[in-house]
Image (cartoon, rainbow, N blue to C red; front, side, top):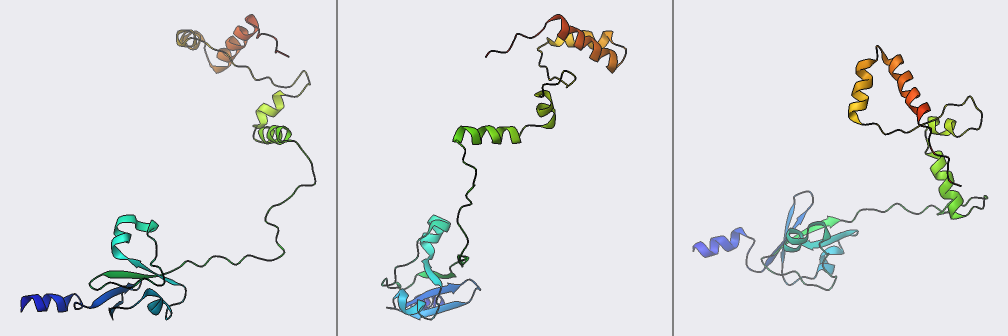
Length: 171
């Protein structure tokens, strides 16, 4: 008697359970193919619960000729709608400017430079110049302690730059 009650609670021996995304459950007598069920639900797919449990989003839908098995649970899910391709819209924008890959890369690198970097590349003598120096931490701490304020500190650092001019650029 207990076994009969358990079979009735799961939908019977010869029924498969299909659960919609809304939570509604359908109990279908087997044998029934997935195409028979899906003809009433265009744009939907049928997934076996065990494959969803194991594979998650990578689970493959049942084939149209595949039969639903008794005592199994299936999910009825709607396929996402893809946007319809617009006509007369080119897939790729083409430029009238013909450049080599090297030139395009250089333009891209120039466009990503900051304004201070761009200003340092100008040729006027009054333009600011960007300088990189390596100082030991002890030297920097000594400069900070000996300086009265930030202006004097900056002047001392510029003085160090003038004492050790950078090597000429390689061409």
